[in-house]
Image (cartoon, rainbow, N blue to C red):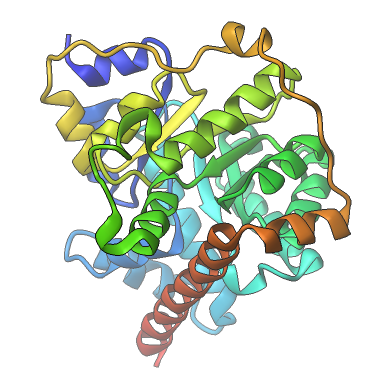
Length: 317
């Protein structure tokens, strides 16, 4: 049995891509997208026609409305392939605006429902800022499920768990990137691999805390740089993995052991904590890695959202 099939025996495998034509070969349950993945997809000859079709059908509408139509069109195509859920992201430029996040999320869900897709099959991705978490909490109360992304710190995860968020996506690879860059020439790859990988350690801490305290929020490790990080988190609720790394797992027959275990976590001595807004902001501020990566991630997604806007505006003319 290959490692991908072994992983599926104790973790829900999710594909991290906007390239829905790649999905079937890996048979993931769910799929995730983000502005960068959608931008990459529409720039390829395989998908350019989808962008053109959506823009042509909605000429005269504001750019942001056309963008949401494009995102949902990709989501609809993905849902033809995966049996579970698709994650569709709210514009990162709204990351610090609670009400705008809520309005955009409701519009996206409305587009899916108008196309005959139940909201149970959609997760709205929102950045894990304080405002994003509060927006997601309100959406959850309305039966719109959310996926809190750009999550790098324990305080972000705790706030999500306390606010009844459906799912969080802690970013393994970007945490690893920060620590590797920070260490410079002193970085020891072998010593920082596997269970010692700083990204793996972050997700493990969150997973164990949630299981210890019966927090229902799903933990989905994301942003992987190598299959070693995936192997070290086998047993996590879900893992969202790029097609390239899914192919590597599929190509290996080596044994894969379960690394995370909910029952083991329940027996651990882990104190319960909580954060109000001031406590959250201070805890995030004290974590240089999380502060920098959250800001960097929002900026990068905002840039790609702007590029998608320009592509659409170019087609409208």
